[in-house]
Each structure stands twice: as C-alpha cells, then as structure tokens.
Length: 129
Length: 215
Image 1 (spheres, rainbow over the protein chains, first blue to last red):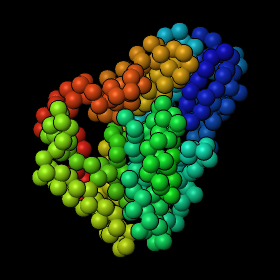
Image 2: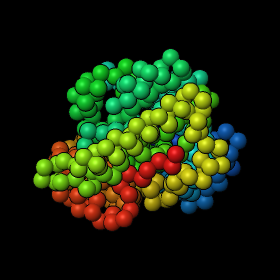
Image 3: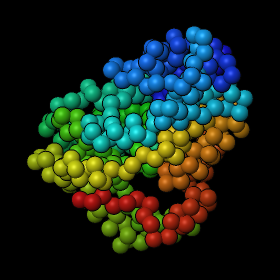
Image 4: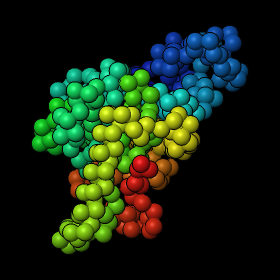
C-alpha cells in the first residue's frame, strides 16, 4: 500500500510506479473526478495529457503537478504528501474570507473557526519551543 | 497570555482562539495551557495547519477576523518585540529600559485590540489587507508538503528520513522561524532557543525577528 498525505487527510491506496491508481482512489483523495474532459470538480475540468492516463488508471502525480500543487515522496516512494498550490492559498487569502479549520482542544474536542461567526475573533499562534 | 483581555471583552462579541503550533502534541503543550487558566479556546495544531492556511512564519502571530468571518488585518506579530535580542545572554535579563519599552509595545497592541472590539478601529480596508498579505510562493507550498511528510515519517519510526524532509522544508522557506524551530525542538527540546537559534537571529542583522505591527 502507498500512503498519501494531503493537508487535512491521510489515505492508504493501491498505487504503483509512483502514484498511478484507479480513478476511484484518485477521487477519494482529491475530490476530483475523472471524466472524458479530464479531472473535474464542480464546474471545472482540468484536461490531462494522454501520458497521465491508462486503462482505468490515472497518474495522480501528473494531475497534481498540472494543478500547480507540490508532490513530494519519501526516498522509497511509499509515502507521499500532496500540498495545496501557492495559487490556491493566495486566492483564498486574497478573497479575505478567513480560511476555516477544525482543530482539537486538549480534551480532543474538535473546534472550527466557522462556529464563531458573528463574533470578532482574535486568532493567535504560540508554541512551547 | 490573553485571558485578561478575553475576560474584559468576552461580553462584547469577542473571542480568542489560541493555537499551539506543537508537533510534539497536546500533552507537551498541556502545562502551559493549564498554567494560563484560560477560558477561551486553546487548540492543538500538530501539523502547523494554521501556518499553512494563513501563510505564517513565526509565533506568536495573530489574525483579526470580523463578525462576517473576514480577515480584518494581515497576519502580524502578536504583541512580542525584538528587545529580547539585546538581552544579556549570561543572565538572561534585559535592561530596565528595554523591559519598559517591551511592556509598552505589548500594551499598545492590546489597546488596539480593545479599540477594534469597541469601535472597529484598526480594521483595514480589503485592498490594504491584500496588499500587506505576504504571498505564498511555490517554494513555500513545497516546504509545507515536505514538513507534513517529515512529521509523518518521524511519527512512524523513520526519524532520520523525516529530518531530511524537515531540513529541506526549512531550506525552501528560510523566512519561516516556525519550520526551523519546530524541527530543532523535535530533534531535542531546548534546541529551538539554543546557540544555533541565536546564531540565526544574529544573522538577521538589521532585519526584524518580530516585525512590529503597523498600527
């Protein structure tokens, strides 16, 4: 099995030769669906080159790089991280809507920024180090 | 750290969310959180997800978010100053004047938050927020992915391999103190503020470690 990490998820998939996998797995990981036009999400489709398509297979690495997102793998190519592209992050921040997140408190209770709509929020980071 | 401010303003539609960038996990942060006796949210962010989403580079940094969920100011230093750079490293003390200046800067920042909550002061027009927002580069985006991969490898018994990814993340995003210091802390508690850290701070020269907020 190949382990794939996304900014918010962790997946085990049957992949080979890097990130060649079934379109079903590719969709489970990325939310993008393989269609005749390419990989699609909502109204948007990103065409894929023939070299990234096999018989009922897709090269997720090639697709992700086409999106402009970083794809990094361990030396043994068994663990990979797909990151958000710079363009996606910048577009979200330039839209000025505070990106939502869900993180646990010390007791493990998940808390989301969006629960605080209607209040002014002072969001601050810190660390022990 | 923010409890007094929160107590003072909580009935005026105000909330504080403190997020620990803490790859050693919640238990490592617990003593600090318990000591703070806080009633606002104290969240644990093992993977530094907030720094990825908001393009942050250091702690503490803050973002003001208004009632509509819009970013009212770009990420900025949350009340800390560079006075620590002048402290006597042998005794770990600052001069009385530096201590006073540091406290005054922190008070000024807290006063700005108060004025925002009371009357919307210091909230910037959208164009200004956009202009001041640091841009994510492809190198930063790759650094985040390598940091994520490095943490996973470390957490799964592959520390040496993970450390290579963390080092590469720091190389790709040299402006991030958090990426470097978190990796140093994972290597050994205390290393994030050890001699290597001070060497890096000195290498800044005239550049700030904590850029003052433009209030």
